[in-house]
Length: 208
Image 1 (cartoon, one colour):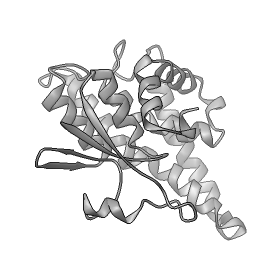
Image 2 (cartoon, helix red, strand yellow; image 1 turned 90 degrees about the horizontal axis):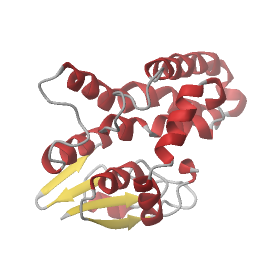
Image 3 (cartoon, rainbow, N blue to C red; image 1 turned 60 degrees about the vertical axis):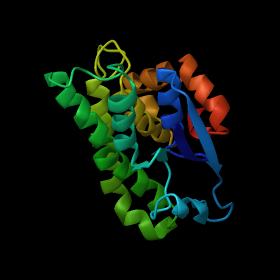
C-alpha cells in the first residue's frame, strides 16, 4: 500500500492528485502545520530525518522529494501511463521538467515569499528576485504555447510536478501576465482527479 504522509497546505497535495489520476489505492496520514511558525510538526521526523512533506512509504521504501516521488510512483505503479517512452527524446524533456520545478523555478518564488517578510530590509533584493521570477515564468509560458500540457496533448507527471509553480505564482498575483500558464493551471484544476484529491487532502488555498 502506498502511504502518503500529507502535510496540510503543502506540496504533498500534488502527490494525492497523481494517485487519483492513476486510480491507485493509497492511504493518507495527516500532519498539521504549527499555527504560529507554519512549520511541519516534529512527528514527520519519525518518518524521515528531514521532517518534510511529501514523504511516501511503500513497504520498506521511504521516498522523499516531490519529483523523486512522482518518478517512483509512475515507474513502479503506473504501467506505462503518464510518462513518455523511456527510450524517447520526450522522456529526456520530461525528466528535465521533473527536476526544473524545484531545482530552479521555485527558488525565486520562495525567495520572494521570505524576503517580503523583511519589509524595507529586503527592498534591495526585490529587483533581482522579480527579474528571476519573470525569467522563469516567461520560460514556462513559452513552453506552453500551442499545447494543453507541458509534453503536448496528454497529462504527464511533468504537469503534476510543475503545478505548484503556477499555484504559487497565482497566489502572488503574477499570472495575469502569463495567459498560457493561467489557462494551464485552470485546466489542471478542472480535472476530476484534482477535485477528488482536494476533497481527500483537506483545505488547500493554493488550489483555489
